[in-house]
Image 1 (cartoon, rainbow, N blue to C red):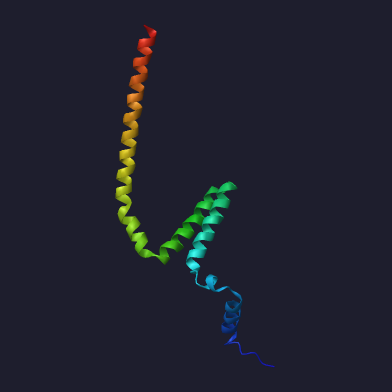
Image 2: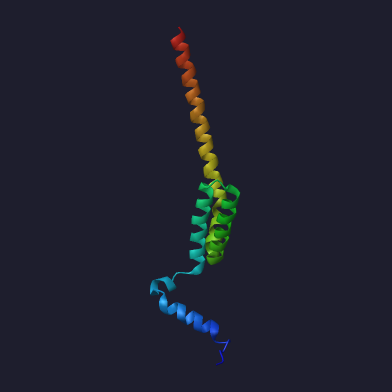
Length: 113
């Protein structure tokens, strides 16, 4: 009894596809890997292994970028806008805190008289 080893991978693949639901076979493996790495990194983060969680999340992000390079290019091009928005938020927060400190000082002066 001889087994044809050249057809074995195809037979295994055919056997797996027969047992999988049709909706599962349409999910791209890159998306599944990225989602799994996100879950794994969350679990690692909760367990206190921050560096490992960051590495796993970074790996999932790289796989996601491989799946959709246009989204990565769009994200890269919009980074300056995100930085500007963050700077504007910091300036507004600083102004608010300065005004709050001034109002507090005025209140202290009026209470001490």
